[in-house]
Amino acid sequence: MSTWKIDHIGKRPKLNNPILVEGLPGIGNVGKVAVDFLIDELNAEKMYEITSHAFPHSVFVNEDNLVELPMIEVFYKKFPGKRQDLILLGGDVQPTDEVSSYEFSEKVLDITKDFKGREVITLGGIGLAEVPKKPKVYCTGNTKKIIQKYKNGMVNDKLYGVVGPIVGVSGLLVGLAKRRNIDAISFLAETYGHPMYLGIKGAIEILKVLDKKLKLNINMGRLHKEIKEIESDLLYKTEQMSEISKQTALKKLKGKLGEGVDYIG
Image (cartoon, rainbow, N blue to C red):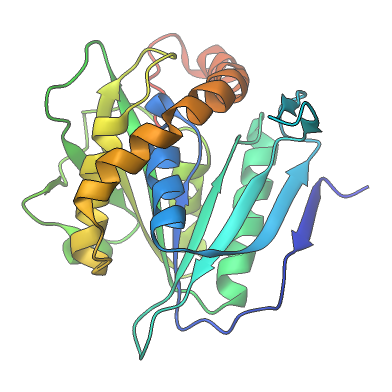
């Protein structure tokens, strides 16, 4: 039986040199908050639903008192003219172990290559001991070229020595993409490292970077309002499910690398 169940939704789109943007649960759920907002703000259309036995062994109870399996979804946004389109990856969970994380990341890159995408952006958080007043955004990538493309006054590219390993899909996509000659960059925003904390401020700082570089024309006034509206749903789902994934992965990593491990993603 296949580990991954990928259901196609609707008609296959024709995309122009799309950029993959990933944001899954992690520290502060920074990436998830950012991508969930982009999906809503851009009226992106769903093209895949992904479920798996490699996801946490739990289900959600929805507002209709029915259960839902944890799921990762892939959306797309087409833009007019010759502008690059977007593939947006978001969801409730991450794979719970190392092998599944690698397999899942390879599946995502398969989808990216299938649509002739040549660029990947991943989003995540850097956990701090206290709440940052104005979160800094750092970046790292798999080529100097892509770092130069996205580096500006809003982004610090001096990440070496600031964090430990980048755990999870946010890191693996960047590393594995290099093997496929896909340029990839990761934006990581500072946030409070407590598992109950939502890194909304960090997500907003990352969205500002994406808005400027990808010319998304995000309504910043609506941004603050919309993020507050999705906060309760995020707290219900991601606090429970991502914590299961995160603690499983972190426990295994600490067993291999020792206790001094930062979780970023």
